[in-house]
Length: 109
Image (cartoon, rainbow, N blue to C red; front, side):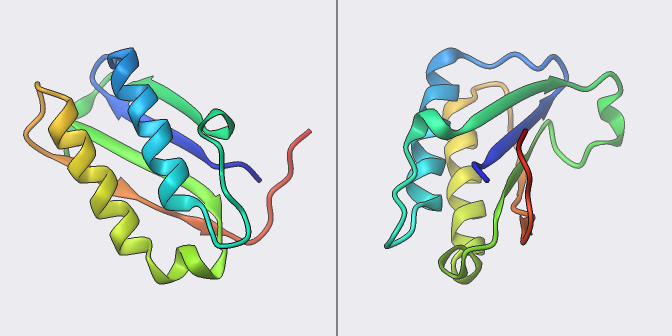
């Protein structure tokens, strides 16, 4: 399964260079010794949230990926690196939250 990123905000709009950089960063972070993940295999879905008062932060990010052992060992590092990237590249936010649900089984049709 190729990783998917759901990126939530009040309007779902992000600059192309921010999305491209996020693809490159997450591909590097999710790569393993035996599998180098190309950025073009990352699917990023910017999603507008109608009622953001229920969100924890102005931007929230779910990175859905398979649970390779190397990812499990560095999941905090991955989330913190993505959060740092978002805070540095999205001028209008002061906080961002990132989750990395790692799953065992995925299907793509």
